[in-house]
Length: 411
Ligand SMILES: Cc1cc2nc3c(=O)[nH]c(=O)nc-3n(C[C@H](O)[C@H](O)[C@H](O)COP(=O)(O)OP(=O)(O)OC[C@H]3O[C@@H](n4cnc5c(N)ncnc54)[C@H](O)[C@@H]3O)c2cc1C
Image 1 (cartoon, rainbow, N blue to C red):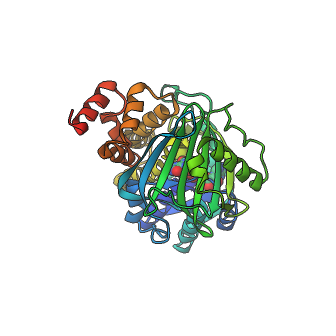
Image 2: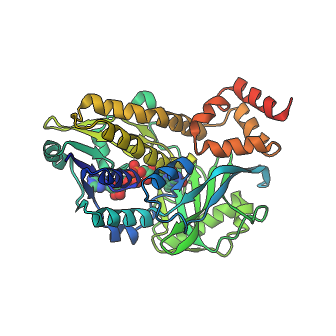
């Protein structure tokens, strides 16, 4: 039986561990935290996942929270005008619903399932020296440790990483008591509120440790008026700042947030990171090779809510590459080929996300504006979150955007 070590128990590591386990592989999973520590710890993400990524979980039968988590049926875009009214305001319908299950709930639950099914769970923060040893005793070592220190083993791919610095300051608050958007009280949607030159506010329903909740997530241009959360340690101060900024920049969202309270003491998060694509193969001092997974190799800014989706897609793609490879050695060529196959999907996510971090060109503003009058444009934009490859067809080039708008407006 082939022995595989997976280092890091997040979306990709756990999904891959559970998938390989059900295929009969002997899997060891190394996590730097126990399930209880994860469950009672701090939130890590907003983790909104769209249809394709959720389907990979269903395919493995590990969609344990699907019936409890709110079904997100739409994705809305509002753009603030200089007088803080809305210059643009629409909601697109998703072909398949999205869901956000707090990673504290999901990762803790999946870890317990992995152990209950006989998987070997090791609670240990792995260092490079550990991997050096393990690469000799396992057939394959996968590093799915997110944006932690182990990424230093994987060189940055400058040709695929246009930004060397973080492009947004991130501030998340999980709350109970948010009201519905009055224009569409009948269904749940992710709300993307764009404040030009300042940043973005994302509001979305989630399923957390205390049941249904909503997330208020500011992405601020570094050095701008939203970049004020660094160093704020008190969760209630973090929430107060979040609301103050909502009142100032997105008063239509603030209007439904006047009664919110934090879900729990771990319900806030602040931070920032530079979006980075890395070389997928890590070379250990003793000569062994390890393969990076998901955020380790392709970490995009969460402005497009893609990281967990990509982690799920990466895990599904790697699972197929591993099982198809049979008993042959997991050598350098196989590792590169496995990453290249995933990059076919990931490249579209990276291109679109990096585009959304920049100042939007006029044809993109036109497209976003058109969503208000033309429902097919709103729907297509919303469904692009599920399959960002589609943006290639109408988003990046002014000619393609114009041709698309003409085709839907009948002009
Ligand atoms: C504020 C914010 C909002 C986001 N919102 C969304 C969203 O709405 N939709 C979306 O799709 N994505 C979103 N993301 C991105 C998403 O959370 C990540 O891309 C995704 O979790 C990456 O999965 P992963 O498996 O690569 O790594 P992770 O989920 O980061 O898991 C890595 C795990 O490895 C562990 N680890 C680290 N070092 C070691 C070590 N040395 N030894 C052992 N274990 C180790 C970590 O503790 C962690 O448990 C968001 C991210 C942030 C920061």
